[in-house]
Every structure is written in structure tokens, then in C-alpha cells.
Length: 151
Image (tube, rainbow, N blue to C red):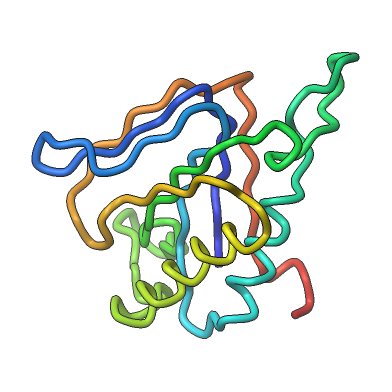
């Protein structure tokens, strides 16, 4: 699994002009599910995201997690994160998981965030043409790929 985590003051996602998910201070996450990803990857990534310390403490140091600041998350499925750009100029999306399985793991990731203590997790609509708005805070943007951890 691949995830782009952006620290935000607010974020929202719209489909057909209607807001379907929104968050306040916290993270806006783009999540890509790769072929071969499993439940253990969703669990690991949710645990890592919920304990990531990129919010400022009383000394201005990035030392607090989303749990510490009672932050919110907007998680959006993003199959293009799985693009293979090795050849030519047109990306191949064959490394991304099949839609049904990808949606299962996306939903599991979101539910695991709640299990790990994130009080509010909003979502986009899987497979929809979405318009995303956010106010990036910092900016702070972190990229996670579960391939870097042995699971």
C-alpha cells in the first residue's frame, strides 16, 4: 500500500458538486492499493498513520500524533499512486489491485484508523471522479509505502 499523508487545516471531497466527505485539522490521505496487498498491510499502515508525530507540541517541535491533537482524517482512494512509469510517457496502472479487492482494503484501512483511536474518519467514494480541496498545513507531506516494513 502507498499513502500520501498531508497535514491539513481542513479538507473536503466532492462528487457531482456535492461534498461527500470533509475533515477539519488532521490529515488528508491519498491511498493506493497494490496487487498483493493484504489485510496486514492495511493494519500496519493505519497503525503507522495514527502514531505519526507531525503536529507541533508546546515548543513548536513536530512531536504530537493525530491522536494527541484529536485530529480528523479524510481518506481518499487513489489508484494512480500505483502507477508504473518506467517505460514511455503514459503510466501503466497494472500494479494497482483489482477494484473490488482494492475497495475492501481501503475500507479496512479506514476502519483500522478508527480502531487505533482516530475519532473521525471521512471518506471519498471509491472509483468516483472526485474533486479534492484542502488547506495544507506547513506544508507537511509524508509518503508511506508498506514495502519498506517487513510485514
